[in-house]
Image (cartoon, rainbow, N blue to C red; front, side, top):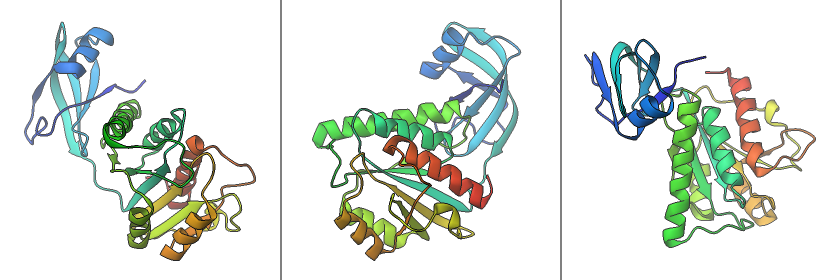
Length: 245
């Protein structure tokens, strides 16, 4: 089994770092929940691409002392994968964020689609976005990623169309599309924007606006996937087309 990964604050892993004291919530989880002991391996990441491979040199209640064996920066990928995920009920959007993070998405954009039953407004909206961020961080640790994906602010139609127009490739999943996702040619570099609708689907008016802005409707296969799984399946297909990075 690979070493567990813990997230540390920015500036915790500067060049030349030889030892790290891990405390706070991450230290308590490592020492008291996982009960890591001297000699065990640990990964630390600042969530922005810097990754340290460490060995536990001392363990106490709520904290660990770690010896840094290797410190490196993970380069940014040539292709930046962005999932635009429509808000959905019953935590299905959180399931989508979790799976997308495990599949190495670079950014997740919450979208208030026409048919989204859930609505983010005011304090409730900020709390909901916070859950998306927490889900992305937890999935980052589970999947041993060096970068936590960005969770953007909520977008409506106008902001989404603007992002579609700026992307190097924008695709929208739609069950009636004639083009399969696997039939696309991906750009060698740049931003690939993937739009996934809510449980009720993307409205005809939304689809027309997305296409006018430059998005290409594509389908995944013969079956109709839930909003919680469609993004993950599409990301896996994109990775396969472009070569798993």
